[in-house]
Image (tube, rainbow, N blue to C red):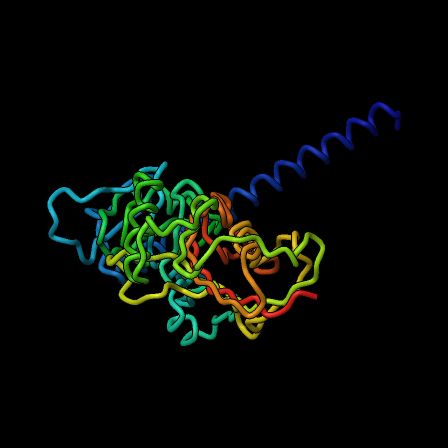
Length: 323
């Protein structure tokens, strides 16, 4: 047998093997697609979804409750939203949740996660959610049925129950409103901006004098509590806002080198400390520019937002010791 014939035989075997593999993959794909479609139909029946709820690209959205306000805003891909959500697999197990009680009931509670309505840029959410949320009016509750190819589930659809509290079309305007309302709850106004420190509001400074005993590089010890500035009555009914520090069992007192910034030490904290005396306590509200800006701050291990993007902050600080 010549080398030429042997080579031709090998090529034939490879080609036949390729055809066989392609055939198997095609058959498997057909089975997976059929199984996916069966799951979609089962979920539609479970949640009372029909073809009138089909929106785009195989995504269904069934509105459960809607506010009676005329012409409510709908989110666009450029907007920020504030929403609660529960994500559920086909088998009924919950994998994504913003409500602490639901998380505890389903053994998903994480003490390093701050639960409650989430600030979300629509464009930063996953593909199916981005598309579905644009069919929800503000102050509505809905079920989203999202096929596998519209998230990262491949051949498994998922269901999201979403409550949309707010569509934030102008973030700067919205945050300014939040700060004004929040300051009012603390008995303050924007006229209480600390002299010489832009975008920090407090009534606790009897005089603005630098602390001559505090220098960059000093070791200091402070007691500190941090809260979100949230005053939107669409989803908030108490003050102060949600506490982001201390988290879990991390405590409320920390020591650090003055001039260094790390969670929860922000420019607002650093700037205010230079005017504080040992033993003095200060309560302040600040814009996100003096906090974590439009990036926010994520937990280093879970990746979840501890500080949402563009979130104004509220601090209670006591300067305990300068070492």
